[in-house]
Amino acid sequence: MDLGLLRSLVMVADAGAITEAASRLGVTQPALTRRIQHLEEEFDAQLLNRSRKGAHLTDIGELVADEARLLIDRYDSLKREVASRQGMEGGIVRIGGGATAVSFVLPDAIAKFQRRYPQVHFQVKEASSSEIANDVANGRLELGLVTQPVRTTGLEIHPLLDDHIVLIAALDNPLAKARRVSVAKLDGQNFVGFEGGSAIRQIVDTSLREAGVEINVIMELRSIPAIVRMVATTGSLAFVSQLGIHGQELVKALPLDGITITRRLALARRKNSVLSAAADRFAHDLSNS
Image (cartoon, rainbow, N blue to C red):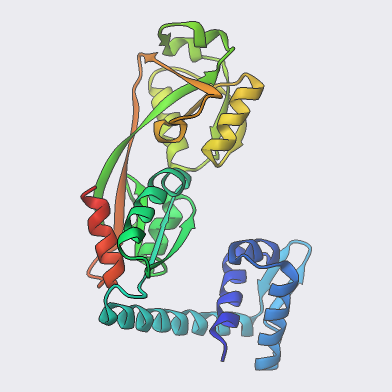
């Protein structure tokens, strides 16, 4: 049995659509469809019901997917154990984080680590903080960079750094000419926000609500580079991580009076889990950097 086929079925089950599952797996939709067809031929049974609304497992498909998760978990656990016994050579680090962590924290840390251990391979997932925490708790990832507080149970949480959230505006925005901006000036202003439900969006919304300010979110985006470009071209404002605007010249960070927004990024691992040698070393380096 090809575990790749089983992983494909599980991904379709999690994503609820062939297109989304193919994107997550990094393959084309026709290629993923062929994988599912091969799996259905293997079991001589229909595993998916396909419709315009998405793809849903049949009863047999549910059975196969449940057993597939167990097989995949056992295989991944065996793989980690082998890598751990082999030491750092050829080890794998499975880590995830939000857009800020994956774009602005992990690249330098991984590059520095791989200069010392060039044979170590990284599997990096970008998703919401809550999804990353769940993946770590379920063993799909060994490590996760998450925003505190973390509601997922079964995790060890180690604070890493405080991430300052700053107000940005286009260089020709009238507010950019002020030495300091009062938070009251933001009331009713157009903003480009992070996608609803994300940890950073919840922190920003809560802070503004406590300050008695109501903004007009006209657009929601996931990545800081996309938000920066929208702010630079549309004249809207935004709150983003200070980590994400270092060295860029499209927008200006504005000193803000009356409110300070900070979030804490932390490293999550599953309680009582044995990390691979590579992941354990990388976690140690991140915590002490």
